[in-house]
Image 1 (cartoon, rainbow, N blue to C red):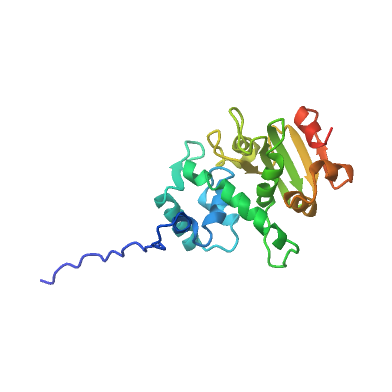
Image 2 (image 1 turned 120 degrees about the horizontal axis):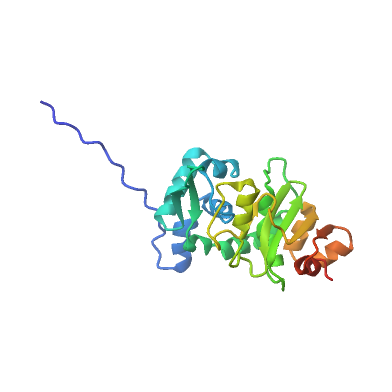
Length: 244
């Protein structure tokens, strides 16, 4: 009788620069194409696989699945099942994964000058502009949720400290606003896609003004004074953003 053949198992692909260097070790985990952009999406809170694929135009399903598996293996993300009635699996960042926020913010600041012109092939999502605005809003005296409206859509961020405080976080507002799978533990989400259910201030502006704010070429108070932005709201945060 012929011997029963065992199923061949492919050894995991080894991705390492094999250098005793902190930068090289970091790139071992996040240096693959798409990984940091997946982190950008998950900074908005837990996401379903289908939602991630929709907001990462250009990534194949195989590559996305592979990167998520690598992120789980490297301790950057976890997958969990939402309780009924959602009954869906979502991916979310671990504490180590959320620690990449300053890295993404620095990359966004460094790359901002390259956004001088939108190419015909460029996709765009409103919440991609959250990262530069986080730095702008981080130093506000008053904390709260700020809803931002662009022609491309809406998103919301937490002003004051850059991350949600105890109580309601940016991810909580995303869930209330219909985000569903984006409900997250307090402190997990630093911004959210879509309108905020409970906003302390609202900003309406165009992409050019938003980019100028992120590059430090314009302050929000200046943008309000010269008509490039409108801030609405009655509380102290809205007044501060208006420069009052």
